[in-house]
Figure 1 (cartoon, rainbow, N blue to C red):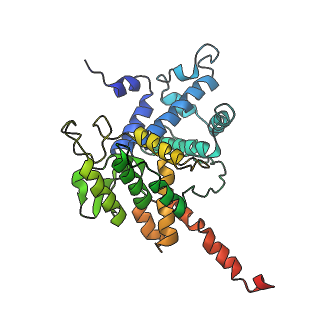
Figure 2 (figure 1 turned 180 degrees about the vertical axis):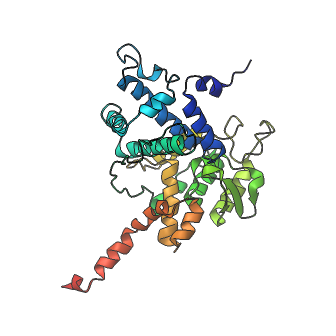
Figure 3 (figure 1 turned 90 degrees about the vertical axis):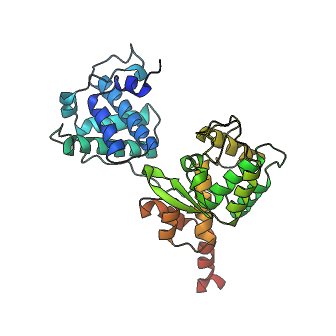
Length: 329
């Protein structure tokens, strides 16, 4: 007999949290990863509140085992702004959360309490309306240079049984700037000549254009791709694992780490997301791509997310300084 794990988990959550997560999925059309992030943050928050309010003895029970199902409307009504700041202090001091992790929790709390007040009508006052996010230092995206990207692609061992598949995956990442989840979910019937239709963040469909390198890598992979032992529902996926199932995100992460290490590019932690940064940076730096086009290519909802790539062109900054008429004195 199969059990619905999600239903079992829901029995241990407050109704308000279950309703909020359903709202995010059905109305706001948030991605699974986003919903899971909200779920994790709010579960930690509610467990903290149970301890903070003296509802449980943290010396007698593990934090991860605290039952939060009894949190009701009255409890939610009693939460004040000071409780939210106490929670953020707890996540920094006792859980080692960075400013970025705490900023995400602030966004979660703001969204949750806004829903409780505006949509669910469960609270009259929103304690998160004045909640401030921690100040964040601007971070430039970590990416491979053009030469490093070429070196990585050339470092793959051609006698490896997964060479063509791995080469195609890396080529797609470095040329198209896909998200990891987007790459893993590519279906063969969504490729039409030089266009690929993918489902991006928030279940939004967008078109990815395949350049010459991508088309060549794809054609070489298709020549050796063998799905004869795959289940019918798995045959539709482009990238298959050694077990003939759709390649998982974890498998791709491990594969990329292996090739990065073999290429000797270990000075930074390069992940699939860093390869996405690489594609965006190379397009902006060498392709004369305007910021709006880059936003569309990457599938960013807000232009502010894309603007981080306007700060990475060190060569143009260097030339600007050299052009100063005082530079020759």
